[in-house]
Image 1 (cartoon, rainbow, N blue to C red):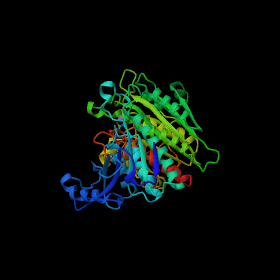
Image 2: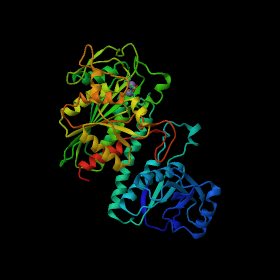
Image 3: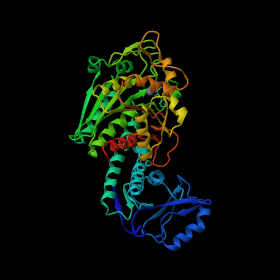
Image 4: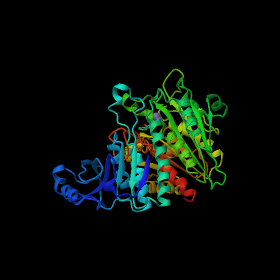
Amino acid sequence: MISLTGKDPARLSVDALVVATAERDGAPQLLGADWLPESLRAALSSDARALGITGATGEVRRVPATGLSARVLVLTGTGTAAPDAEALRRAAGAATRELAGVGSVALALPADDVARVAAVAEGALLGAYTFTRYRGTATSASAASPVGEIQVVTGLAKDKAAAAALDRAQVLAAAVHAARDLVNMPPNELYPAALADAARTAAREVKGVKVTVLDEKALAAGGFGGILGVGQGSVRPPRLVKVTYAPSRAHGHVALVGKGITFDSGGLSIKTAEGMVGMKSDMAGAAAVLHTVLAAARLGLPVAVTGWLAVAENMPSGTAQRPSDVLTMRGGTTVEVLNTDAEGRLVMADALVAAVEEKPDVVLDIATLTGAQVVALGDRVSAVMGSDEVRGEVVAAADRSGEPFWPMPLPGELRAGLKSQVADLSNIGERFGGMLTAGIFLREFVGSTPWAHLDVAGPAFNSREPHGYTPLGGTGAGIRTLLALIEARAGR
Ligand code: BES
Ligand code: MN
Ligand code: ZN
């Protein structure tokens, strides 16, 4: 499916050959493509303006492959003439995404060191994704399948480290694709028990991973009042899924907690029709956690990783929780539910308590937690809050992985807004700074365990337009960052 090649790109018999173009004075500048026949270079430079090709970031254009063995030459824009790893990822991904339906693609982007080979491979694989599971015969013909065969052209085709980077890219992309699939699943089919089953099925293929599922009876016995309270309005009961990877010589233990609301209607504090669209993606944190644990196991990282998926469907009904209900969470803290649409923090609180009971070295939670995250940072930049050290560790891992994460504070004065008249805590606080208040709520449940909270409400689901290697729908946000953090703890 993906391989490295050291062959002359001009002689590769592929359906599409991709080269990078930078933008210089509004015209495209070929990047490291001195092997292109002189006649083709001349034609491109004289015709680029007329063809409207600029080399701008995100631009993908097909031109005739005159004099090449490839069927078509594809120019993918990097903007800058000195693209960093993430710019290469995006340019490679934009190309494979736009080339969906094409059988074989070779990418001759500047990939002269292992980091660049990795970036091109990752971007190409991340961009080669489509979700067609629910297309019937009437529409399947128009829905292209992702690029089949990918070759990365590099002088390092025989290099061991480059081969290892390629293996890692495949594991990483498989994790992201699988998480996207779960997020894209319709909520009538992906209800809590179905998500738990999907976790079991996915883990069966990975050596050394164990899945335990707590059903509603076990949740009641264990005192998981938050997950039960949120789930009680649905005819499809909630679950807590534990995914364990415990290698024999582990450098420490990382716990991951993911929000798994398979559909968020808001409950009795019901959302508007508009506000409910896209709420099938409210389990993206759980999907990211599941596939991060599996990827860590596939890579054989010497770190123990425990994933906790807090799974429920938030529905209004005669059995739904009411505003003013008081829940007793795992560990005994009581919470007055003043808004049933602030359900994520309720399920996360229970799962965080369960996670820290095992005394991991660090706990990271990831959730599509607040609309306020989208207001603050938009739909491409995620937020991270928590103890200073872990928050910094997440930002550093995000920077290495190419995912945008921005550090946010947990201002002490917002804690007062979470006081309840009747219980230990209320589940909503002041209107302004809603993302931070949600973080402060979660902090109440992690005790002294080093912790960070990742709010991916915007970036987890793309409802606007595809870009770079990011498709419409589920994106897999957070997986690359979490994996990079675990790798760093593994000493890799
Ligand atoms: N799942 C939503 C947050 C969300 C909003 C995710 C938009 C993705 C896009 C969450 O459960 C929610 O409804 N949060 C409320 C909290 C409020 C009631 C305190 C919100 O942000 O409006
Ligand atoms: Mn909600
Ligand atoms: Zn929600």
